[in-house]
Length: 454
Image (cartoon, rainbow, N blue to C red; front, side):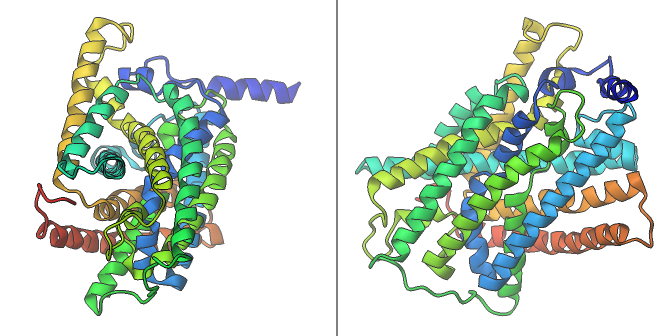
C-alpha cells in the first residue's frame, strides 16, 4: 500500500509544469519509452563520425589509441548516467528539466545556463549538423563517382544537394516523431559499420593493401598537436551534448529508464566503434584519411576503388541514410529554440500562425549550415573542433560538476575526488584540443580552393 502511494506521488512529481513554452510543448514531447530513448541515444552517438576513428588511432598509435577509445567509452557511460541521476533527482522534487541550459541554470545559476552551457550546446549541435551535411555530400559524391564515368561535379555541389534533402527532413515536428527513423538509424549504423570493417579486412589482406606503417606521423610539436587533435576526434565520436533533451522525450515516471536506454546504446557503441577503428587502422596505418570511406575509394597508384563497386555503393548508401537521421537529431535544440522564440504555445501546433515561422526559420538554419559545409570540407578537422569546444565540456566535465553540486558527496570520499579529477583532466585536454584543432583547420584552409575536387 505504502509502495503504491509512493509510486503515485513520484508520477505526480514527474509531471511537467503546466505552463510550457512552445519549444518544450511542440518539440520536446514527453511520450516515449526507454526503448525509444535507446534509439535516440544510439543515433546521437553511433553516427558516421565513427568513420574517423582510424584517423584518430593513426595520430596516437596502437597503444594510446586503443586506451583512449576504452577510457572515453567508460567515462562517457559514467557521465551520462550521472546526468540522468541529476535529472531524476530534480524530477522527483517536481522540477523536471527538459533542456541542458535549464538544468545548468537550476544547478549552477542563471549565468551558467545563459552564457556558458546554452551557447556551447548550440555550437556543438549546429556544428554536428554542418559535419553531417558535409559527410552526406561526400557520400553522395562517392556514389556518383562509383556509378558514373563523368567527373564534372564538385564536392560543394553534392553538399548542396544533400542540404536540399535536409530541408525536407528538418520539418519533422518533434523529437518524439523521430523514434521510428532512429530505430532505422540504429540498424543502418550496424550495417555500414559491418561493411566498413569487412572492407578494411578485405583490403588489409589483399595485394592492393598499402604498406602498413603504424608509426605516428610528424615530429615535435606537430606530433603533440596531432595527439590532442585525435583526442578531440574521439571525444566527438562518443559525444552527445543533448542528454537532457533526450531524457525529456521519456514519459513520466522517468527514473531508471535512461540507464536502460544507455545499455542499448553502448551495446551498439562497443560493437561498432572498436571494430571500425581497429580494422581501419590495421589496414591503412598512418595513411588513414578523414573518414575510412575516403581510403576505400582510391588506390593512389592506379586511381581505382580498393573494394568491389557493389560493396562501396552499399556502404555509402547506408552511411548517407544514417547521416540524414543523425543530422535531424542534432537539429532539435535549434528547432526547440526557434519554436520557443517564434511560435505561440497557446495556439494549435499546426496552425498557420505556427507553421509559417517554423518552415521559414528551420529552412534558414539548414541553408546556413549547408553554406558553411560547402566552404569548409574538412570532416576530420570539424570533428576535432566540435569535440574540443562542445563534447568535452558538456559530456566529460559538466556531468561530474552537476553531480557533486547536486548530491554533495563527502569531500573526503572517492566519489567526489574521482569526479573532480576527471573534470580537471578533461578540461585541460579540451583547451589543448581546441588549440590544435583550430591550428589544423587553418593549415588545411590555406591549401583549399572551393572549386577543388576534394
